[in-house]
Length: 241
Image (cartoon, rainbow, N blue to C red; front, side):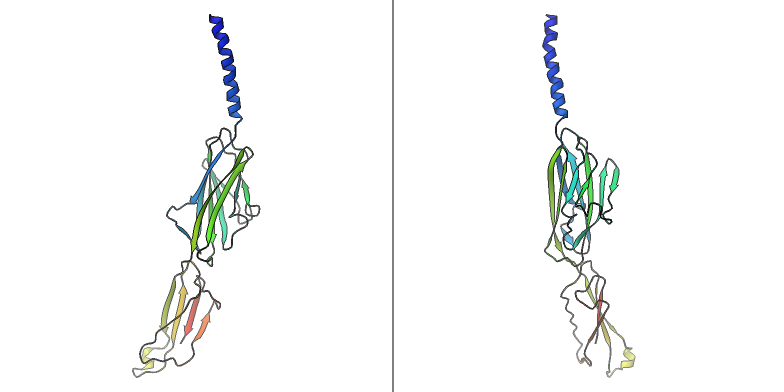
């Protein structure tokens, strides 16, 4: 009876080893999520930067070898946006990519370190939106990952772009009111329009209501360091009346 019991266990032991071997030869599987680092962000502001945080986790049965990350933000860049920083974080280690020098950007993909079973990599991508980007356009953060032993998995996050200009008007008299006199006279007023940004201001109209009894003596002249519209976030337009 004892020998029969051992003979019965042997096939079971062999089958267990075979199953474990097949399990070790399985595939890596990715789950991926991406969203703005600041969860309060609801739209992209022209003239500002947004950092997206992407988490890539290997939920498969084997390590993911030579994963490749692709991002439609990288290549080609959409009009009015550019990537300014790209960092990978794995196990407390940071991997910085020289995107300013063209790394990842020129090719449109980056090779990642291997991701062990149950491990993950965090990708931080900072995107700068041009100050003249039009409102109503979308910034689509579409990112994918695949490996030698893992099928491609993708995720995306869409932000609507809006402009947020801050146009301010100041009126400054150039002549001393005493010199003008109480009975009237000529006065020169400088109207300055400044855009504090962060977005460019387009189709800006300047109106100024004159006090009662005041008329324009000469044709207003425009002087500006930025002669052409729109007013940039650093520009100042002045009108001398």
